[in-house]
Structures are given as structure tokens and as C-alpha cells.
Length: 442
Ligand SMILES: C[S@@+](CC[C@H](N)C(=O)[O-])C[C@H]1O[C@@H](n2cnc3c(N)ncnc32)[C@H](O)[C@@H]1O
Image (spheres, rainbow, N blue to C red):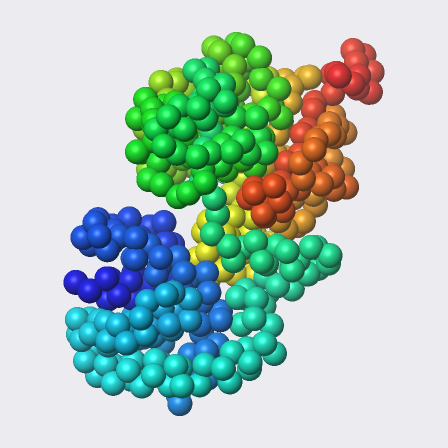
């Protein structure tokens, strides 16, 4: 099938029933010829990244809106506009192939419409693009609720956040510190013909060009993993030592679990996740890394169902969140996330944090992390937690990355090439015997 038709069908599943690209793209990639995979990926990510802009163009080109049930036709039109506006595909080929895709999708009735809309765009391009300058959502390619939230939370930084969200992310690796220094592995990459530069975390390397990671030296043997540098701060913040008992409370797919196990020997680590299918990915990851953990399917907000009653020295809460810090990697978040989700996520994060606290031993350390840039999911959750837990204190993060907030530290997307991430470190005070007060552990 024509790669544009495949793209339109999978994008229809994102725009219509709201499936994620992570779910619908891999099976589609497997169905197309290897030579078409790059273009399929480009069209899928590109249309999601620029959908608010493309939709605004389409609205101005159509005499009446497309029937909402025809999400595949709408996706095909957006795919056509994306090629004409953002890619260097010859215009006649982009139009002809997109019209042909309509027929392949058994939407012959739409072939004339696709042809007319794309040709009209080519004729009216300058005038239409000037109109978009006045339209905030179209101009920034972000939905209004998200723009409002970014502007409220980051009055000085929101334009840079928006710009970073619309870029393609770099390919960042984590080098397994048990086997190589970052520099040793960088030299091995250079021997194999790949250029990489140190990134903002001690184990992170950024590749100069995008490559299928499995082709890199030692990938199958676990020498490296794909992980953004921002995500590589969780393990150092946990202050791990050999033999500690650690809970990774939202572990799947296991990116940070693997890093924790690479950071100190003989950890007694429990990797918990509510989703059994995703937890299987942790098993696969750990097998490749030759690392061991106890895998448990369970709800972090309800530990009574799975906890054995032995306290943990360290807990990582890499909480489910809006993922507004990783939009450049997952541009479909712009289409799938709704404003009302944020309050519900913050409530779930609060409950999870509150209910996991009693599993931490006195003097123990809990790291709360999200890949969100919204204060409601980050410092506000931590502030409410600290108010409700007098036996908790925050250990301020002193670092040359990110920025200090009233609680915790925030990395904004694109800063030092990193994804947007939030971290806070919470320490349990030691109770003083016979008293109401607590002693500070460190
Ligand atoms: C941000 S992802 C974790 C990413 C992971 N730490 C990594 O580095 O690869 C959040 C995870 O939390 C899981 N999750 C969501 N709600 C949960 C709950 N109540 N209890 C346990 N896991 C949960 C999701 O299934 C998802 O795998």
C-alpha cells in the first residue's frame, strides 16, 4: 500500500479514537517496505507535531468541515499539506501520491477533494501563511489550553518551551558505567564511524545523527541504552550504595530501573508497575542489560496488596504524568492530552506519594520525578506532601542543570539538549525516642 495511505490510516486512529503513536506506529512500520519506513515515520511524527498549524490551514481551505467520522480523509489531507509545507518532496509528486492514496483507502469520493485542497494551498500559500501569524494556536502549533498553562507557569520561558517542543529530539544514549567510562564508549563509537558528544548527565552521550540504536556497538549486549540525559538524573539523586533495598514504584518500561542497577552493585531492587504488559518490557530490558530485579505487578497507590512489610532504603516515584516535558519526542501528546487530565493526574500523583511514604525507612530517601513542566504536577504536589508529612523534609538539589523551584528542580525542554523533567528529593526524618520531634538524618 502507498505509504501516504498507511500514514493516513494510522493518523486517523490518533485523530479519531485517540490512540497513541507509540501504539499504532510500530505495527504499521512492520507492514511497509523497509525503504518506506523513514517516510512513514516522518509523516506520522510530522503531522502530529504540526497538527494545530495544518488543521488551521485545512479549515481555511475547506468550504465545509470534514465529517468527524472521516478521520482518515482528514488525516490524508493533513498529510498532504505537511508534505507541501514542511518537506522537500517535489510538489507534483506529493499531490499525485496523496490523491492516489485516497483511492487506495477506498475513499475515491475524496480524491477530487484532496487534489483541489492541495492545489489551492499551493496557489494561496503566501496569503494563508500570513493569516496564521494572527492565530496563536496555529502559529505555535500548540493547543490553546496548553499554551495558557505554559504561559501561566513559565511567563518568561514559554516561547522557548514551545519552540523546543516543535524540534526533533536528539538520540541520547546512556553508557553502562559497570562496563565503560563514557569516554571509552565514545571512542568505540568513533572507531565504528559514529560521532557522539558528552551530554548533560555523567553517563550520557548525544549522537550527531539519528541511527537505529540496535546497530550501535554492544547494544544487544547491554553496553548502552537509549535514554534522554534528563532521565539520567534519577539514579544519582537516589544516592545509591551497594546492597540497598530499593523500590522503583512506576518502573515500566524500565529505563530508570536499568540505570539504578548499573549505578551500584547488589541492589535489592523491586520494580513495580500496574501494567503487566509494560512490566514485561522491564524484563526484556533487564535481560539485555544482564541485571536483576524483582518484578511485581501492583498499584503503587495501594501498597497493602503487594508490600511485604520490609521498609525500603530508597524509593523512586517516576509518576505517571502529562508528559508535557517530552512533547518533542511524543508530539501526539498535543492531540491526546486534555486540560481536564491535569487535575486528575495531580490527584493520583499526590495519593501515590502519600501512600508510598510509609514504606520508606527513617533516614531513607525518596525521589519524586515527572516528565511534566506543569507546576500543578510538580512543586505543588511536593508542597502539599510536605505540609501533610512533618516527618518529611526536602533535600534541596544543588546542580548545574535545571532551575530551583520553591520545591524541587525543573529542567525545561531543550535546556542543554535535555527533555523537560522535574525532580524533588524527600528524606524521612528519624523519630527521637520518647518525643514528638524528629532528628535530621543528614
Ligand atoms: C513515566 S512512566 C515510568 C517510566 C519508567 N520509570 C522508565 O524510566 O522507563 C509511568 C509508569 O507508571 C505506571 N503506573 C501508572 N499508574 C500506576 C500505579 N498506580 N501503580 C504503579 N504503576 C503505575 C505506568 O504503567 C507507567 O509504566
